[in-house]
Image (cartoon, rainbow, N blue to C red):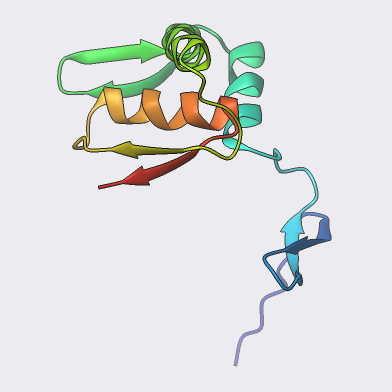
Length: 111
């Protein structure tokens, strides 16, 4: 019988849900999708982030679209904790909407 030793990255405990449950999470992981996108834009803005049929977006281009949509939703009064229903298929617009909602702290409800 062969045994393998697995080396896991550093982890931390986080409290989630109500009532709180302690879950093991990787210590270096971003706190949100917004943070993940921000890190990607800062480290590799011209790298390909999203490909869907003939559409190709870099992280910088994706971030620009997300920022424009988030700003528009904010002007409409959408804020953290609000729910946004999305009726979109697997396409670029779905990803942009999901990330814009995350930037505002809103909750997406895929339909």
